[in-house]
Length: 341
Image (cartoon, rainbow, N blue to C red):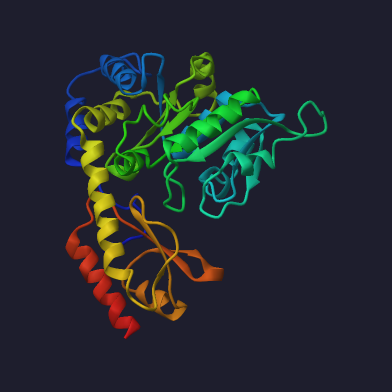
């Protein structure tokens, strides 16, 4: 497959991660997370997110989000999310099927929830005919490439806790957000009031597996049993865990995210002044969303893979990865300009 701009999931695996997996393959180890590798990495997560943090390694992002929601709500309760949220658009109804809960969606101009927008769904408390709002979920960075500031996260956490609710963060691209905001993971999660985090890495150099980080200890009490029921218990868990060790301990997460964010800025700088190209959302992390003539982007897709994001508005998404090169971008923009000419 030709290198393109379809998804940061299309990239390969960081060599450091492959080495960590190979190193963990040297001897036998206890299964299901009862090994020295997992114990070591669990301590590393506490260093990053605080001593109360409990980490659960899972197979994928859908599993992480579903297990996080499963910890917060029951089947008669509801989760408030942006209409564009991954849990609403791209999980094939997994939270609804596994948890049995309802998603209360909110239309947003930029993919971000605000207390005012959330309040439009905060009703029906105690009314047995309505699903009870119990959690808010946000994505950092959002599906539109925008970022919540730390103060915006704190405001949503305060609103949730005021109503005896929880705040979940989908952090599939948390590293890109931390680099863009120049903050630590803890600054925008634990210290901002997030109760449970889906912490991803496959979009930033890992091979397989994500994690759920329970920042509110109350939500972690039953996680082992619910993880097993949710089909997310990996027998050879050390191979999931050591990827995060290579990712966190060596600063790989930062190097990879800095690069993909920088490549997106380069792409943005090369297309923003082209008259027929309109960048529709702020370029804050590693994605560029543009509106351009359909005949152009459909022809460009014959050369490069990328997603049409909003067919009605002719908006497409170009994603940069940790292994995107400057030559990749220059060649891509050259092909675009030829079509526009």
